[in-house]
Amino acid sequence: MQNVNKKEEELLRKGKGKRERQAAIYVSKIMSNAKNTEIGRYFGIQGSTVSEALKRIENRIKREGKFRKEIEVLKNNSLLNNEGLTQ
Image (cartoon, rainbow, N blue to C red; front, side, top):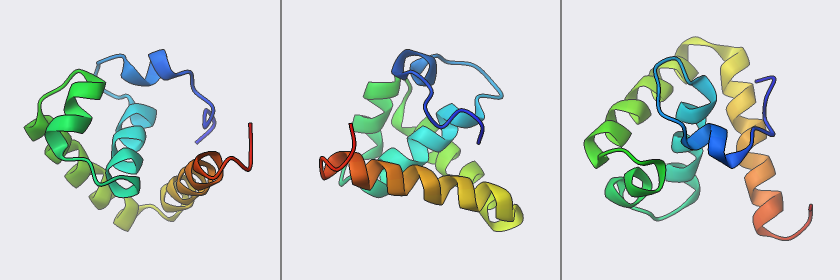
């Protein structure tokens, strides 16, 4: 994913084909104990839309090794940021 450091407002912007946005939704779900409705509220979508995005991302992760690696980078960056190890 070329834009791992996308600005928050760009990730919150709605629209089809927002690969980074879907990845952010996925990482938000797997890195938190939040319910789909909570994640949806943050991203301005319904909980059912979060569920659909998660399914799409999970299928894509299974199909595309490169994308799987990109998700791992996002997860690792999230872990580092949450632990205060990076700025």
